[in-house]
Length: 250
Ligand SMILES: NC(=O)c1ccc[n+]([C@@H]2O[C@H](COP(=O)([O-])OP(=O)(O)OC[C@H]3O[C@@H](n4cnc5c(N)ncnc54)[C@H](O)[C@@H]3O)[C@@H](O)[C@H]2O)c1
Image (cartoon, rainbow, N blue to C red; front, side):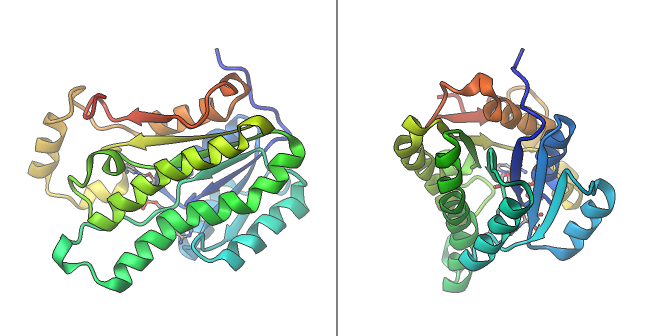
């Protein structure tokens, strides 16, 4: 059994407007944590706000993780409201499948600045608070694509996800003696609304290639995030956890 997260604890989840991020944020709320939902999509953020708003337990912040100033303002709003930050989940990302030869400079910069820059800037912004507390958990949602190279995603996406795994180790090593752990997870083929628009035949083929013969769901991911953010995981840092149904065994 995992020791429970405390009820005055504060978690930040980036990209919490839908998909895996929303599932993680909901899991933290259920566990009694205070949760800051961060997203740069106002429509998504308003929808989840209408569903999950609780005056004392939630904050909904329209923040672009790739914009250092926007991140700084978001983090200071959270500190003003709750005075502490226990868990940061770097989940916000953009995935594109653009072929190698067609990736423009603009698209390259966008993907790297959101997926990798966003992870760096918000982690940097919470570290002082976590150091003062002598406790903290940072979980970076990377990807199978960052380990294996692209199957269905572009070079920029895979490179950004590989970068997140290295950032995880850099932060983990420099914060390990301060009660702060930093870990990465590497999901693959998690069922999200995006799949609704994909060719059923292609989806079936994908499913058949997964050793456990099913797609993952966002609960498979959020359960692992919850464990890594709990006191039970205090001896785990700098690690990368695969959530991929056996697609990559290493
Ligand atoms: N779904 C999968 O199969 C899968 C597989 C491997 C890894 N992942 C990783 O899991 C994470 C979540 O994936 P998902 O499928 O739920 O994605 P998604 O696209 O459904 O959700 C991503 C969220 O991030 C938000 N976002 C995008 N740019 C942002 C920015 N600049 N600032 C703040 N928020 C921003 C979006 O608005 C969206 O709400 C990503 O890091 C992704 O790389 C997903």
